[in-house]
Structures are given as structure tokens and as C-alpha cells.
Length: 452
Image 1: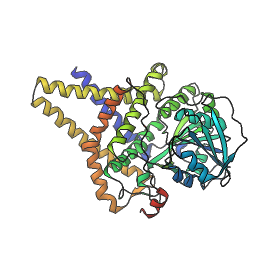
Image 2 (image 1 turned 135 degrees about the vertical axis):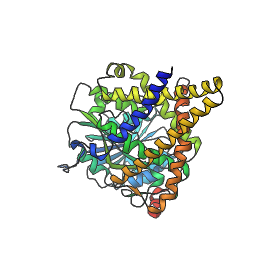
Image 3 (image 1 turned 60 degrees about the vertical axis):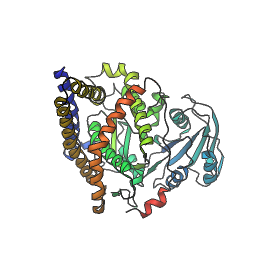
Image 4 (image 1 turned 120 degrees about the vertical axis):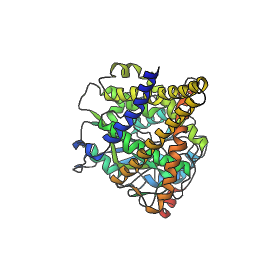
């Protein structure tokens, strides 16, 4: 038992160390460098599912109507909202019926109407029967007119250079899908491509901002270089439309972002040159929970989605465990070291505390806290430094609050994350509820002008 627990603990250390080293600029591949601009602007359709989004829809429309790109359209999908989402979209966009017809290649719930904005002709609205986020995206794919499809959450704001960067990245014909860089909307400043601000963010939001820096600049960066990126964030995903059609669109599940990423990996598994990439220069901002209740809902849903995909893709992941990097990292790192190890280590602490109290119990806890403290500090500081490498940093006056967030992360938040993982993994087998997080309804366009 000691051997296996030591092996699990070693895996918990080895993988983060690998990602920390592999994400460094020294390991940047030639294919990551966007040396030459695209010859022309590719067509991009932006799909934004909306279910009861009245609190954020005006912010979304404001950000979408004037992006610096010539060939894009935006399709909002009203998924049977029971609030004033559709009413507000009509008010802000002045909708008129559109004659465009769906492809009829991907199944989805009934579309009640398809409209075009009289004020902004490149913005459309689908009004449909409620079917969930995946179903909404499928309806959007059916009516998308462009070569590339971007999926955004309703609370996601693209930065001005995001679409041109995406266009350049997809000059490589072997790229079939990509994920963009996601920052926390509550930390957005008047210079969204240069700085983040924690001054108006509460401690819970601040620590999530750190979490995103680690997840994207370290973990996703490393996994993408291994060709093992298993999750394209639902907040900002980019896909070739034809590939989405070939895999049958999005599966109705609690974790459509993980699911579509793995479906594409499975689809291209016999095509060595095809790839899924991460584009850190394509930046967006998305709103995150501001209280523990909503954070709990979100993280439990994420973990349920992870378990769902372990079960659904067990055949593909098992058969290609030592053939495809995505399968190896998904099963060995994320499932074994990231989920199973949490139960084993917790069980060891409890059992030893009962059999050999109190010295053994305290030894385990002391060792565990020292590991979290030292390793957590290194990871947080490395993530902050990596964000600076890509041009986004915190101003000097942010340092005290940043340090407080780092201490909160290593002492409390990491333990809470382990609880989310353990609870969510078990809760999946009892229900697969989505548990929508409440929007704040804050006007970020106005707020960001005063943030510095």
C-alpha cells in the first residue's frame, strides 16, 4: 500500500513539474510563432448561446458590434430563455426576419425564428426551443455561414486583436481547432492586452484569476506542445466548421467543451499532421463567480463533465493510452493523479490518524501543507511571470493584493479545489445538473475605462 501511495504522490509532483518546465519559452515550437499575417481575412462566425442572460447581454452586444475584423458575423442563440433576454436583444438590435436556411446536417431542437439586426447587419439571433448549450451550438452551426466557428459564453468579451490573431493561426491548414487565452472579466482594465487589475476584485475572484494564469499559461501551454490539449475552454473555442459537421456537432452533455475536444482528437487520430492548438495571443475575458456558492456550482459542474468524458470516451482513451499524448495525460495525469489520488491521500491521512494518533496524523498533515506551500508558491509566481512574457502584467500597486491572493491560494483555495474534485466525482453518479452560475449584471464596458 505504501508503494502505491508513494507512486500516486510522485505522479502528483511529476506532472506539474513537467508542465512548469515545458511551458517555458525555451520549448516554444517553430509552429507556434505567428510570423506572417494571413493573406486575407477568413470568414468567422461567432456563436453565443444565451439562456436567461438578461444581466449580461447588453455588455456582450456592445463588445461584439465593433470588432476590428472585416469578415465576421455574430449569431446569438436564445435557448428558450424565461427572462427578458429575447426582449432585450430585440431592443438593442432591432431585429427583422432573415431568409437564411439551416444546413439540416446536425440535429437540434426546433428553431422558432431566425433574425437579423437592422442596426448591425452582421449580427443575427436564433430563437429556439430550450435544449441546452450543446443544442444551441448545434443550431448555430447549422446557420453559420463562415469557414471558422468561434464559440463564446454570453459573458465573454473578445479583445480587439483576438480575431486577427485567430485568422493568422489558421493559416496553417493542419490546424482544425484551437483554444484562446481566457482572463477574468472582473480584472479587465482599459488596456486589456497589457494589464490586469485586482483592485476591484474580491479575494475569491483574485485567486481564480491566478488559477486561470496557471491553467492557461502553464498547463494548457504545455499540453498543447505535447499535442495533448484535452479541453478547449467553452468561453473561447475556435473550430473549422467542416470538422464540427464531420464529428456530428456537440453532444448534449454537462461538459460540451471537453466532449467536443476529445471528439475532434478521436476524429483526427489517424491524421498525423492534423492538430489542436492553443493561441495565447488571442485573448478574451469572461466573468467568474464572486461568491463560494456560485464557485461551488461551477467547479462541481466542471468535475462532473470530466468524469462524464472519462466514461464516454473510455474506449478511445484506453486503446490509445500509450499511443496518443491526449489519452495518456487525460487518464494518467487528470484522472489517476488528479482525481483518484485525492481520495487515496485523504484516506491515508484519515486511516493513519485513527490507527496511529496523533503523531502519524500530524506528520502527514505537516508534509502535505509544506508540499502545498512550497509548490504552490512556485507555481503561482511562475504563472505571473509567464503572463508578463506574453505582455500582460499586474501594476506595482497590485503587488500587495496579489501576494494576499497567492497566500490564500496555497493555504485555503487549493484545499477547496480538492474538495470540489472529490465531491463532484461522486455527485456525477447521482445527477448531471448544469447548475447555472448567476451573472452579476455589471457594465464592464464602463468599468474597464476607469480600471488601471
